[in-house]
Image (cartoon, rainbow, N blue to C red; front, side, top):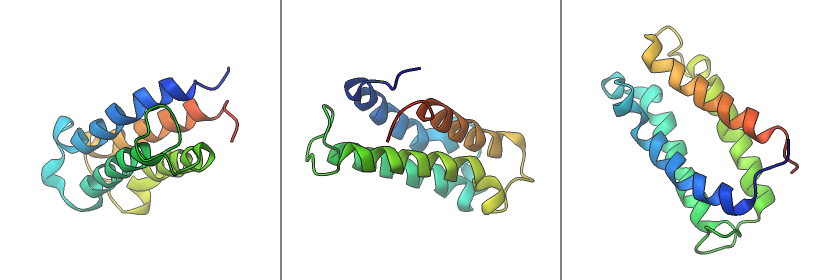
Length: 116
């Protein structure tokens, strides 16, 4: 499987960032508080800021190399995937931890075939 073009990657980054910001409300765990809410919201902000600063078609400031952007995407995916265990909310109801794991898996699986 070939990596997605940077133009498509850029078009996906902004909605993904917004989705992560809204995830606690969308999946009904905003009242949980703590890391369960902070992790997706923080990563959402980072995704949007990183996208604005990346040297690709969707970037505005264009100072961040795409290679660094992709490495940050891997790190964000891994953090999302393992955050329920790292931050102690894996015993919470499934609507709290499953979105983190699912989002992390999607990011990592989608990125695996690509080259850094």
